[in-house]
Length: 136
Image (cartoon, rainbow, N blue to C red; front, side, top):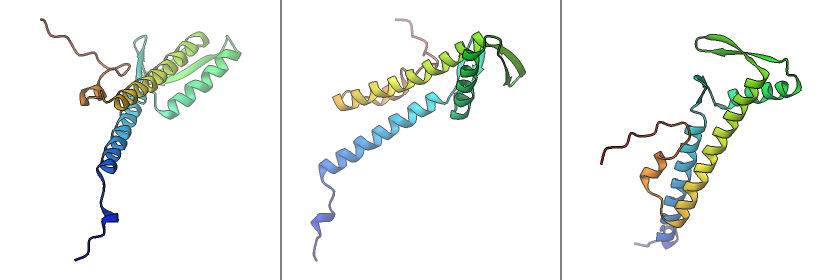
């Protein structure tokens, strides 16, 4: 029997495959947090790619006209959002997205440093419920 050693996976290759799987898991978790929506002033705002594009377009319009009013559809019905609030909403969405990418970068740095834990994948994402602390 002949063994083709070129087909064997080395320990280094296995380690790189495991690292790449973690990189993919971190990116998937960032996307989940990024597109999960945010709450601003008691209003839920979707942060999927389509919503982000619509909000960005409305923010551009609001920057050009103080009189602009956005007619925004919510689960409860339409609401009118004045230009100033449109800009605040766009800022909140942008800040949320950036915070998600910042968290992804932190986790990738922890992976490279060898300090990443499984629990860290679920911790520290923006607009996620903070676990209640247990009394000491």
